[in-house]
Image 1 (cartoon, rainbow, N blue to C red):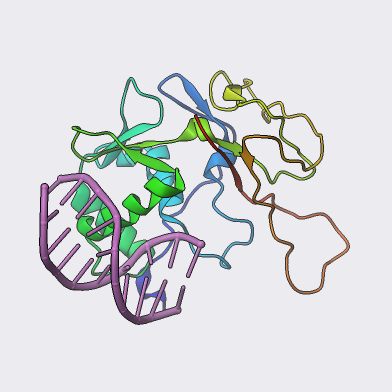
Image 2: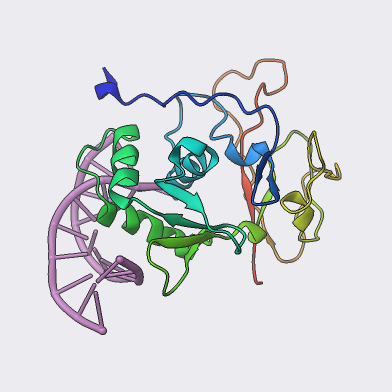
Length: 196
DNA sequence: CCCGGAAGAG
DNA sequence: CTCTTCCGGG
């Protein structure tokens, strides 16, 4: 079943990832709240590959520019993506089209002139859906740069609120009977900063 | 290679 | 809505 497309064992990350001298909060890698419910998104998958050393020869962060990565083996990345999504016909041409849709969504942009090189717009992304965690109006670059050595990033619990220059995307309430308890796993949601 | 329009799946 | 597929064009 599932045509053998298993999520290649992703060991739970115990802390923040440290890549190129920059801490990546591990919430940045948490794919979805309820496993099995929602489909994996491509940029989650990319982040997932980027996180693991065994794929260094396939895809890797570009030294120098923060958030920039290079697909060293496009065919292999496409193959892995196709396996995960049960799309055996996947190739780099199709995968790259999907990446291009991220341009307007401001998740990614292309590093022009550099082959197979894209860049995450991390500076425009901040966390939103941690339980009762609000987000201040400031850009909060420390979430990704110079993050605290351990634990969670220092966010101020101001409750959910939007400020000027922020686009709000509230997590939708879970359907069905609501159990009288807190959400077990905070879903990864992202705030998108307009302008910049 | 890289770009986006168009259609269509789920 | 997020891709997947196909494709004409640069």
